Length: 157
Ligand code: ZN
Image (cartoon, rainbow, N blue to C red; front, top):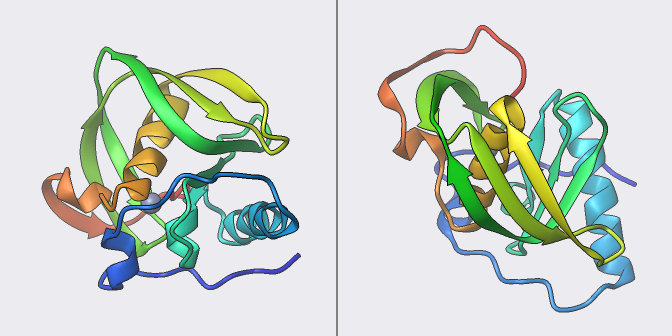
């Protein structure tokens, strides 16, 4: 287990599209462990593999109910709308207002490579969208309404 360096905005890797994970391996399991450690160490609620410099479709999240791992996530359904503050571990010290769906249903593989369905509302829905965007090289700053501000809250993704 190790803390990995979080890439910050301006780093080209954050703008690249990540590749699907084809098979489980020790390397993938180590990456997932490290991503969780790195996210918790940084007091984040979500982290995507490209944020630690790995272009693979892996996301970890914890919105307060324990760790969630999503490998090759695919959003199946969205509905509603929420507008609120968002931050990102790759854009340190900043936050901005982003409108996202209020409900998201997605499918993904868990850390054991079993497919499951995840449904989220509010913060979890926001987090699923934010992290899945990272896998396509999209940052929340692309979607922000107005200007970025100095962050005054915790819970960065
Ligand atoms: Zn982020």
